[in-house]
Length: 314
Image 1 (spheres, rainbow, N blue to C red):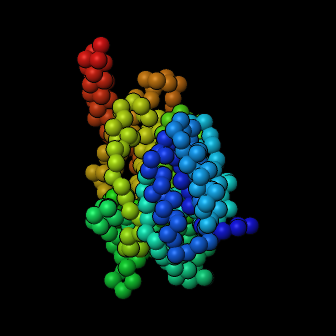
Image 2 (cartoon, helix red, strand yellow; image 1 turned 90 degrees about the horizontal axis):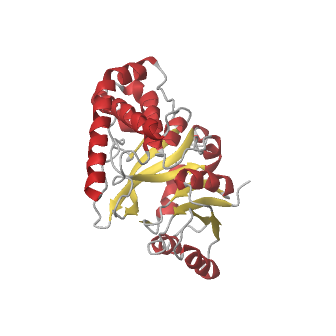
Image 3 (cartoon, one colour; image 1 turned 135 degrees about the vertical axis):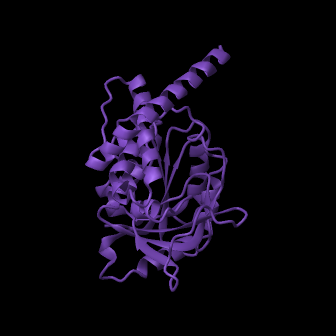
């Protein structure tokens, strides 16, 4: 069914100047059974030419797919359907990984007993900065092994693990759980995929840093609050519905998510009045109801600031 152990997937948009980090990392890998799948999300720079140059000289297969700009969610769905690797590993177009990254990820995957592995979809490891500093917090791993078996929702809400992490998912599992709402314009955070997977599959979390994180300008965090409002509202809805069972571990965080849901939903309805979105489940609905005044107040504050900036620009 699959031709390779890994598909290393890189979605990219106008990152020709940093894409070499991925290529150089893959050239240095100690484990060689992989393909590099680049999905170009409508770049207008020389991304295509750079990839074609590498295709002519690389010792591993490189495939290049182009789509009109539709954001990562559509590129992700295209990538998982085109992947020829059993394990799907995303490496962003401005990051790098250590030479032993694929070898170690496969080691941790094969360390899961054969009788249990069907119940797992992923291995997730740590990232480190160029300085060698670990990004975010460690996993609450077992003292004897440096790993813990859990899922992304429990790790976030019960164990309060924060910061950028990295790992692969089984390609066959990702095909069961593609990005929904692909017709929504703009960005949708990836948690909507991982949280659905967490309902059926476990992840092995390992305290080993294998990806090198380059902390550049984050265009998402700098975006206007109304720019990707519907996508953020959808993400908040998912967080509420999947995280509700951990309310006693993270009540303040879930209250904040409920407030953000109301805030972004109002922004979305400013642009698309026909948007209807509601959280499912008793506790998520109660949280949204309780935080509606605060979420609406935050929306009004956003609008006042946006109008003020518009007047200054004029």
